Length: 171
Image 1 (cartoon, rainbow, N blue to C red):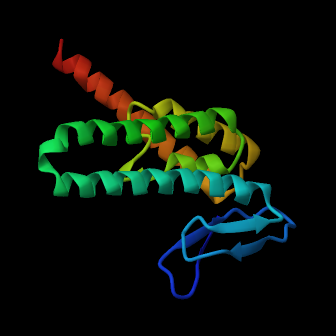
Image 2 (image 1 turned 180 degrees about the vertical axis):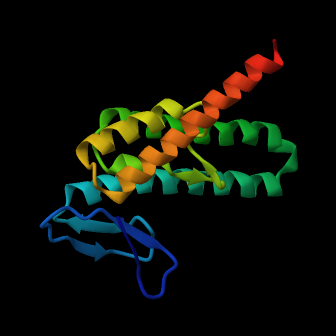
């Protein structure tokens, strides 16, 4: 994974390098998602994922601004914000299922909205397990694969310990 920041902008462009590939990036404006990548299928997949995340973030920012300006609508706006978050979570889950062996799933796994992981734990532990298994199979020596395998192993241990403690407490 590469993260490019270009002069005069706080925006980043994310690329995924493929062996022996030449990637050409054309920046069309100062927007985070207004660029094209030629020469890399994986970088284009990553751009789709990043664009979806940015759209969700922008929608949430608009909703939160509206909440500040319109306090009497907080209940309805909270429901709309929840729907944006649920939609992003569903997108992420679908992406992992549909692209199980892709290294882009690593990025999907660790996406955040409002400083919280889109795929929160322990509800989405199976998605962590799926990404860890598939990346370890496809890229066993990659540092990202090793990280997600180790992280998932720790999460599984924590989840098991929490379940055991719950059983003991309720005994």
